[in-house]
Length: 299
Image (cartoon, rainbow, N blue to C red; front, side, top):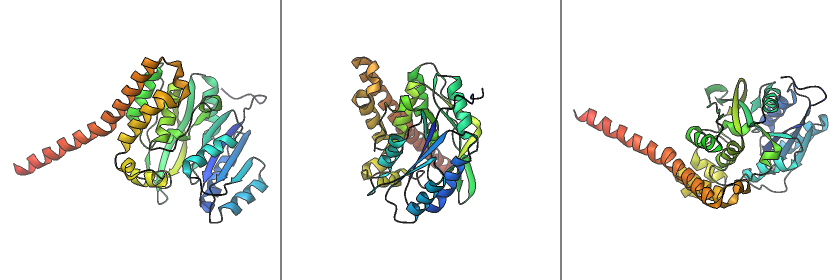
């Protein structure tokens, strides 16, 4: 399906940034070079102390599609991600990291897929990760096409890794119902809620190119960057399970469609599933392997 010329919905691309002037230019250029015309780019500068503000102002002067916002003080990464969403105006929205790039047809192909099937709430490309300028690996291709929102959510939590899906194209009318919270796994909870709302697809013909570092760091550094406790960095999946329980039980209002008993049951199940599948089971497998190695050596 090709989008008719008379129907080109606006797509907003949000870029939260901090002290990333040189890399940011390449990120913005990859968005401006998209083969889809009706774009806006919203950059929120989290009170950078380098030349980021000069770079952004110059880019905004040269292209009317760019809106530049400078925060008076550093409000933390999560709030800066929320800021670009709040300041954007497109019917469709996506985030991109300030040192990442997207292929030229990323927006148009993701948008085509969303327009073709209203059952989908998010479409993304493959996430390719780079270390020191060299491609390191390709992330998981998240495809959640089950009709049941419960099955989609379970599969999401069972398979999510670095969560490149977070940088897919989404419907504003859906994600405007959600809150991106400053907590361990806040991006997981956000996309899990998107999966509950609708299906998710990964297109293999386009990619987002992401650099290891920045947002893709260890849990301990992630906790430090989000101003969370050391406990949350040391036991991330326990924290995510607790936050998921609270989110489903009473924080996210779109779960109000469930009856109270069903909501409690769902919150309890998801919290238990995360804890068992992502923490206890991997720990148990690791212990079994260690015991097997010790037995092999002693023979």
